[in-house]
Image (spheres, rainbow, N blue to C red):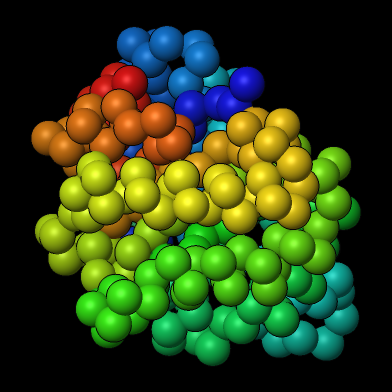
Length: 250
Ligand code: PGA
């Protein structure tokens, strides 16, 4: 059966020393969290090595992105092998901030996902609609096409190393959370899209996280939904107490 996971997405926050302190605090409190809940921190590239050195095996490490090329003359880019060599086990891909501000396309995400999986990194693939799309009633279509364009290029076997994060753009960093019903409706839909392509077993085994203003006060209600298997946490992950509190909300 699928795993429950709470992953922190630090985004472009904390200096390296601050990040190390935060990671240490998360590790110290992680003993409170039942073993069946996976814990991941996704940190800036610059932090990977230092944070890896203070993490325990209880808390896994993720990058927030990776290059769409394996190696070579791509100034400023960071490859999957580099990420892996820092001690990370995961990378987030397709976060809406990357799609919106850095021109991340589904085509690029296919390349990135291929490289990440080949390097042995798990992928947390983000999908989700913006406010305009939600108001136009297109949220199902948007999520379906993001899933199809990227994940339908992969196999059932690959899906074992892929986590989906549904993050409605209008709920990210805005304090506006999707209601548990709104989130569950899309999560169930995403699982159905996966089931139609890969079969029910793969769909049932795929962890689907909710992200967007998830915090200690709303995590319980969200995680109580049948198809919500945890959260991708932005702002609240910058505070170890809040992050762990969320992980205790199953
Ligand atoms: P938020 O961010 O929790 O600050 O809304 C979530 C995310 O973007 O992953």
